[in-house]
Image 1 (cartoon, helix red, strand yellow):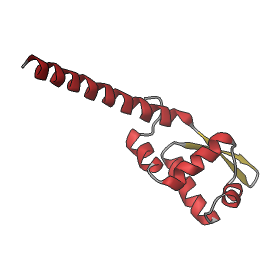
Image 2 (cartoon, helix red, strand yellow; image 1 turned 30 degrees about the vertical axis):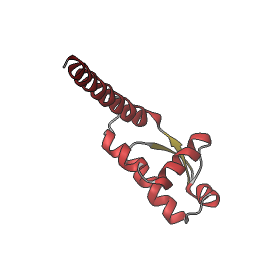
Image 3 (cartoon, rainbow, N blue to C red; image 1 turned 180 degrees about the vertical axis):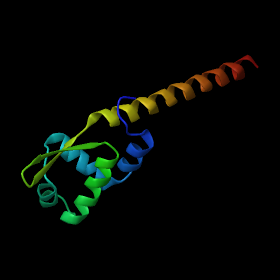
Image 4 (cartoon, helix red, strand yellow; image 1 turned 60 degrees about the vertical axis):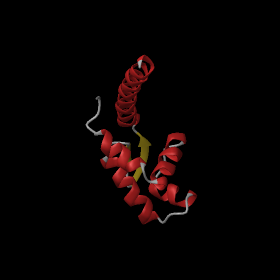
Length: 106
């Protein structure tokens, strides 16, 4: 895996609908917490809490310009989590194929 984030941290963060909405919005256009709060039904403090969790999980990175902090999506940890999940699904598919063939034989 390329990032330090673990798949569980990424999945845990993205399990929350508000955090997914934040990531969706930031994927379209990096923004500050204030800009996000203006476009969502959350307070600035609520946005900040979600941003902190997303940043800790490695899903977001920040860019500081004076007093302003702009948030950007960091796709690496999300790709790593998706690759982990894909590998698990391929393994499960192989196991199901073995069971299917065994059932067909008899």
